[in-house]
Structure formats: C-alpha cells, structure tokens
Image (cartoon, rainbow, N blue to C red; front, side, top):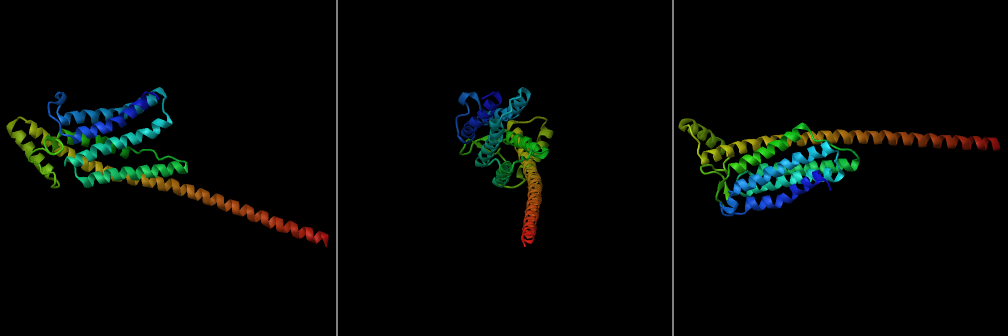
Length: 260
C-alpha cells in the first residue's frame, strides 16, 4: 500500500457517501453547507484524486499492478454514481446516462478480452477528453440544481427538464435578462449552470460514442493481427508435418527397396 493506491481507495470509499448526500434530503443548515455544495465538494475532491494518484505514482515510480487495476474501477464507480444520482434528481436525461455508462461497460469488456489475449488498449486522447467533460458536466449540473424535490435537489425553477433543449432556451432568456439588468441573481446563476451542464452532457455523449468506436477499431486491429499470426504459424506447422510425413514415407520406401 502506497500513497497513490491509498488515494485510489479513498475515491472508492467516497462513492457511497456521495450517493447519500445527493439522494438524501437534509436541512440546508446541516454542517452549515447546502446539500448541493456538499455533494459538489465530495465529487470535485474525488475527481482531483483521480489526477493526483497517477501523477504521484509516475513521479515516485510507484506504479503497481493494484493501482492499474483499481484506478479505472474507481473512476467508473465515481462517475456512474454521480450520473445515476443526477437522473434520480431529474437533473440529467436517463437515455444519455445509459449511453455513457453502457460505453464504460463495453470498453471494460474489450480491455478484459485484450488482457486475456496478452495485449493492452491504451486510452486515447478522445477518451481522456471525455473524462474531463464528464467531470465538468456533473459539476455544472450539481451547481445548477435547486433545493427541493423528493431527494432534496431538483432542476432550477422555470426549467422543464423533461423537454429536450428547454434548458437552452431558458438559458438564452436568462442571459438576455442579465444583460438588461446588469446583475445576476442566484436563480439565474443556477439556470446558466444547468443549461451549460446539459450542453456539456451532449458533448460527453458524442465523445463517449466516438472513443468507444476508437477502442473497437484498435481492438479489432490487434485481434486481427493475432489471428493472422496464429494462422501463419498453423500453416507453417502443417507444412512441417507434411514434409516430415513425406520424408518418412520416402525413407520407408527406400528401406523396402534395399531389403528387396
């Protein structure tokens, strides 16, 4: 156990607490921190450990098999927990979250098969950008939430989260209101954050599908190379066996001719 692995484990242990905070209504004066800010602090803090554990491991030369295995699991647990909590609070559309989490399962399956075949599929720049936009989207959506609802959080007042692109129209009207008044209220700030979060979520969905396609292309290319190598090896072995069999038949024939 070293510091990078401890940070990774702490990110896993934060996941249940994050779910409780985002899905449990409690008084706004609890610990003197509003519910959404408490949840946001937990999520952002855990996301920072995602960068810190890799940086420290590379800096100190403490890259370990345990860390390599636990880091992607911790990332997926944290993001999945936050996104599902947003769906429960009606802050994010369920179809988008299904695509994002489904992509994670598909890529994890590909990596498992690749590991069994003896090769690895490295994360692409598109996948890393997708992870960054996920953190930004979740942060903006939590910031844009308002107190209320069964779980304590709900979309900002005046925004119908069930209607596609409704948040974009409300955000545009809010920008016009702010420009006219020269000031911004807390509710208007929430509307702007919520609309920006929903827009960023579209970017996440796009890069999730694009990076998944990229993973499939890399996986297919390496599997195809492995199959071709195995096929060439099999053909060489068959040729050797045939030559040996032919040589054995020829030697047997020569031996019979000598006896006769």
